[in-house]
Length: 355
Image 1 (cartoon, helix red, strand yellow):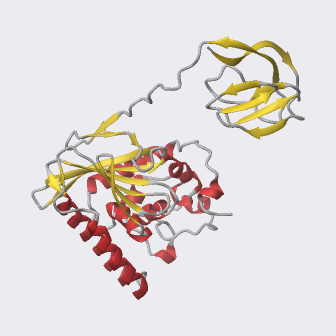
Image 2 (cartoon, rainbow, N blue to C red):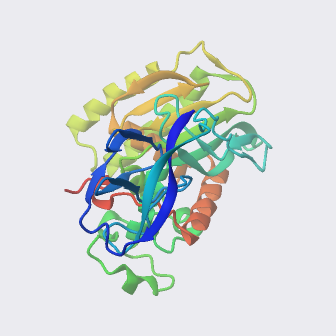
Image 3 (cartoon, helix red, strand yellow):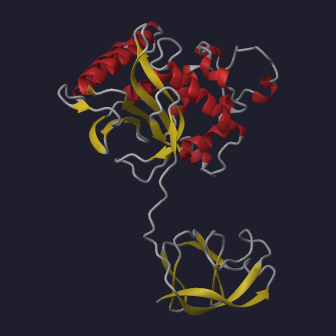
């Protein structure tokens, strides 16, 4: 039998926590005397006299009122043996979302093998087709780190997002919104695109955040790594040519990208197969690396942020998009998401890289 705190008596003591001490605690911390408390969901505790008071934390039978430092309800606590609570309960499996064209099921969220503690949510999915016959090759789904999703409410270009903003072409860089522009003043100008960030540039700015972004690929028929590699490489080379024409790639960067492209190709051994219904993940991780996973196995890592970013952005290209149906679905997914943005409180400045 494990010992847990339970409420013995209750006394109203307004302001009792004002003179208390606040300290972070781990899953097991001594709060008062020899009493040990194990509380996995807790974050802070207040010590008042010889009594331990835990503030907040859904799912625990003891707490102390409202926010720290405000008038609150204090409890006199004692130790009482109760039945232990199992912490080994498996997490609920994600719901599955079928692709409209192929009925291929995709999980509504996932964690990668290389970053199992990071949850990424499915925004949209769609089939890739080739040739005028519309031959289906694979279904692709776009997943975004929950911390990155929580930051969208702080990014002016995502406020009041509508699907057409992603589906229309980007405007030149010098016309894009800067952080010191009054977005509220721009919002009411219907039909005006000058100064707005649209199209693939929206995704480029999103993927520039230090979050994890995943394209999950599931073939509709058996294929091999060589075939997939050729398609990825063609998309990257096309993006490199466009960037060179815009003057965004100087000779030094061009040489580095050429070497990185060779490394990229080596991540996909020609002989390896990917059967129908099996998964491959293209991941831009929080450090800016490109990772490739297959059926839960890390295939390789490419430490080149340009390649990692542009591989993801290629699925949202203004021209020659890899899968228009996926792009349409993601646009609709973001519009739905931004009607009720995630409420997770991410440290805005730290996540955006500011001091």
